[in-house]
Length: 133
Image 1: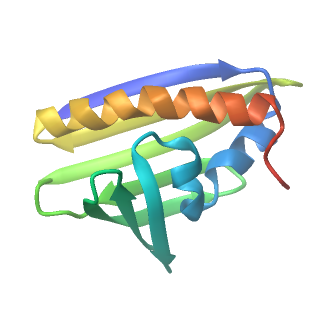
Image 2 (image 1 turned 180 degrees about the horizontal axis):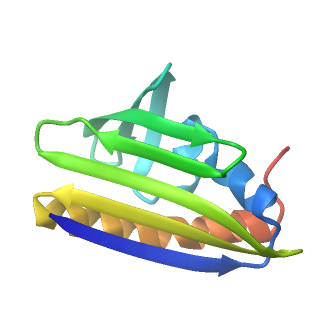
């Protein structure tokens, strides 16, 4: 089982950063290679640029903790857990942490590579305040 974690210090309040990631349907706006998604209840299906549909289960979406957790339920994964946490450091200063754990290890590495691009875009969106309330 491989676990990888990337974090990014962002020059924005944690609530601003959280607004970027808190809506499950917003993932195509900030995760590279995801072009669309559908959400029904706690089920989300993302579609990649290559047309691959990947089903996910939303495990937690907690506004008070600014914590979002999901798992990919596609049969290629024996286990997957993705977690995004946003922490307030000071006014106008926060930390966004994106963790991925998966079996097989190669898929964890693949997803974790995408999380770096996702953090770049989350940072850009939050720091330019392009996110609505």
